[in-house]
Amino acid sequence: MNKINKLPILLVIAIVLGLIIGWIDSRPNWDDTGTTVAALIIVSASLGFFQSKRAWLLAIAVGIWVPFFNFVSHQYFNSLHAIIFAFAGAYLGVLIKKIFSVRIS
Image 1 (cartoon, one colour):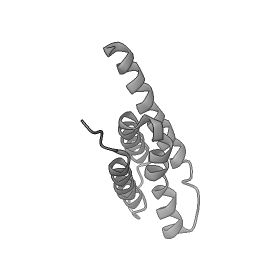
Image 2 (tube, rainbow, N blue to C red; image 1 turned 30 degrees about the horizontal axis):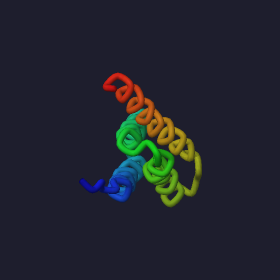
Image 3 (spheres, rainbow, N blue to C red; image 1 turned 90 degrees about the vertical axis):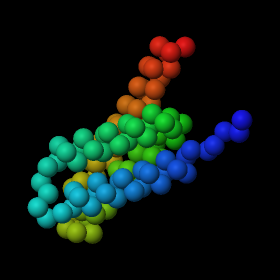
Image 4 (cartoon, helix red, strand yellow; image 1 turned 90 degrees about the horizontal axis):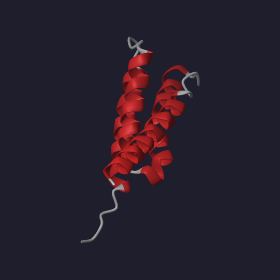
């Protein structure tokens, strides 16, 4: 059976979900950093679980949009740390995958 390359699909999902998170975070009445961080970690962890070899790329695709929208809306880079949370989430997903693969084997 031929193996489907899931990276392009996951990359599109990462970009779309990252855009949604970034757009919501940049809204004038949105002031819930914890929810934004949780969304970044959960989305990145899920994607990192399914594509552990390119977790770094998926983390960037998810996390870059929060600082992008904040720069476009407010002209500041205070939210660049969002990328760190996306990386933490992606590699948390990789760790969870490794833990489950050891227990299943």
